[in-house]
Image 1 (tube, helix red, strand yellow):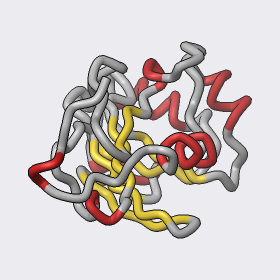
Image 2 (image 1 turned 180 degrees about the horizontal axis):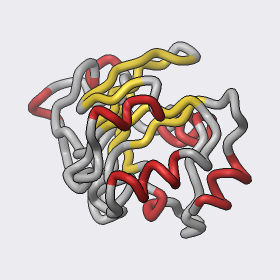
Image 3 (image 1 turned 180 degrees about the vertical axis):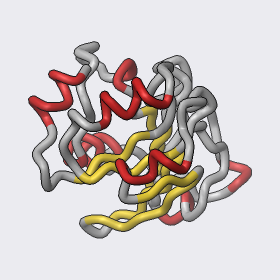
Length: 150
């Protein structure tokens, strides 16, 4: 995974980690983080037991939930899929992990875990890949019109 990261991420790139980054100790995780370039934002997951505030130096920010805008798109980031997320009825994206490709959210939401890529290459998603997929999906307009898709 370190090699994949280093082959993909440049020092000035921004990377959003949507939880469950490491199952190792705090010190072992710090050793890994020291090898990874990029401006890292961590969205905490249920298995991030290694995290301690002493690890903040490796991240631009650490949170449970994050909203940002890029290239005219709003993105809601959370470790878990959210059934009703902020601005979903206005075309916002929702990016999540946790489910290992085993859940498909209706509308403009998707699992961006490394194990959820269609190529099954365990690679990192890039923003353009995500946008190209999600802009083709419908915007869910009303609470009572939400339907599960597969």
